[in-house]
Image (cartoon, rainbow, N blue to C red; front, side, top):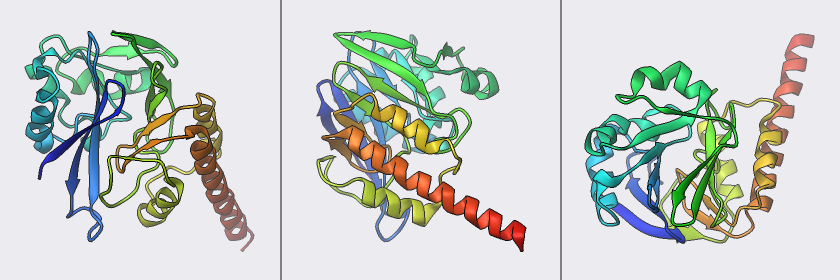
Length: 251
């Protein structure tokens, strides 16, 4: 395996490792995002076994030991499995996440006391970069789920939202909703709930110009329209589940 590095917005880099054995025969990408600034931030660490690849990729852009912030969508191996490896090599780095993740998991799992973020709180990274933390509980899954939005470039790093299989270009401007719908049909990975559509539409209100997918290409274009279309599909799924539940109860 090797890790590809591509700039998807000014000062924001996608670090992508393609693993053909996952979701074979299509394969699956595992992406991290590095935002450069006076206090660089890494969104997703990758699993522990992928740490040497990701560290080498970061090293092409900056000294890895200068990393200042580590964040991710939720507590899961591919999102934060290597966080303690990063804390070990970057002496000034801190994990930054919301109250739920910190209180329930990260105060115990992280080798250095994490920074707890409020919903909507902004971290100024320097160099004009400002990252806003946003709670998205149970969307697409996990109580502590969250995304981050880099304000200067209009880039939403959206974790598992829009997950798709296969390997392709680092940055696309075409349809990302259709492949995401197909991946949901394949994996059934989302925690369907009545609030999913509302939560995703709230992200559409940011009018992002770039979407950073953890599994799949980054997207450049009208992020609001893509997010609303994804929200519509989750509304449809939630309504179908409710109908099925009503039918089961009636039977």
